[in-house]
Image: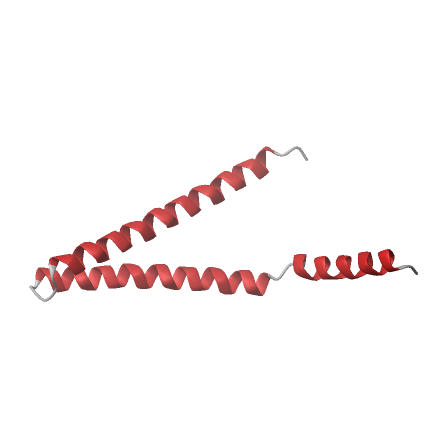
Length: 94
């Protein structure tokens, strides 16, 4: 076996391991994103309640609302991409 074949075999082995499906990792990532999204919304609500009662300064309220808006826009964009991918799969010939 020559050196090129050896390198090709090593490269294939590494690429195959890197591309292997890991559903557990995907589920954990989705769970972390969902938890982070919910936490951002909860923090925004708490800051808004505090501001209504006079306990938070307006700057903190604006910052919390901006973070919440960004989180919602990101979630909507992600949802749109998933729906678009699903529709593309439905259009594929079988």
